[in-house]
Amino acid sequence: MRCKLCTKPAVYAPLRFCSEHFLAYYEKKVRHYFESTHVKGVKVLVGVSGGKDSGALADILMRIKDDLGLRLGLFTIDLGIPDYSVKGLEKVRELAEKENVELIVESLKDHDRIIPEFAGPGRKPCGPCGTIKRYLLNKAAIEHGYDYIATGHNLDDEFYFAMHNLLHRNVDQLRRGAKLLPPRPELKLAGRLKPLYYLTEKENRLYCLLRKIPHDADECPFSVDNPQLAFKAGIGSSLSREEKKNVLKSVQLLQQPVEATATGEEAGLLHACPACGYPTTSKDECVYCKLMAGKR
Ligand code: SF4
Ligand SMILES: [Zn+2]
Ligand SMILES: [Zn+2]
Image (cartoon, rainbow, N blue to C red; front, side):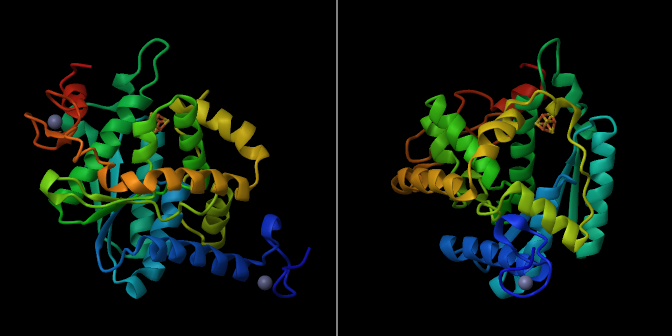
């Protein structure tokens, strides 16, 4: 098969692109994200895990940062998951060296907790793990003076979250899944960016291979039987990227009027946690503080 834009062999069958035209397409999608969100001239802390999505994100942002006036840093957390965290951290350090960018590393061991401690018989630690990752990424952004955090969420992730929230009537969560949330410094909340919003998992994997980006292809041991992976392999893989995009566009239309209130600030839902001062929707201490104190 040949590329549809030149005569070179195609490396990406779904869109029939050679490597050069695939890389140009990839960059165009990320530039489109920034044009559509009007974000430029800001400091962005990129959350990286050592995986393909965040590795691809860090690389493409480094390539376009000067045009957009972005100042970038990388942030990662050592979750203390045997083997997986060690390999992930190794890849993140290689990535930071390749991209020549500042890397902030936070270790849960310094907080006397590790993620496997949150697992129990028939209970995975993924809920607490997600809370802890979101909390520490936001905290690092605030403490180091970044306006936004950026994560490697891709089209397949966003499609899954949208469908999951629709199926479970989680309207608040659906609203918070907006492709951009603005910064709220007065609440100690960094803005949130998802620059890979228009790119699929397959596209991120191919980008990493073509650009030789250091990444660990292994999944976290706790992701076995993860309903998200089963969904992506089932209904997710039977739909085209256009169909998934259409679902997200419909969700965006629902989000638009509420984007400004999606953090819950205007609705009076957010309070400062009495223990740490970061925002929470809980009446008392935030979930992060409760988790770390062993209260949950
Ligand atoms: S699969 Fe692993 S890294 Fe992902 S949320 Fe669960 S414990 Fe955390
Ligand atoms: Zn081509
Ligand atoms: Zn707290």
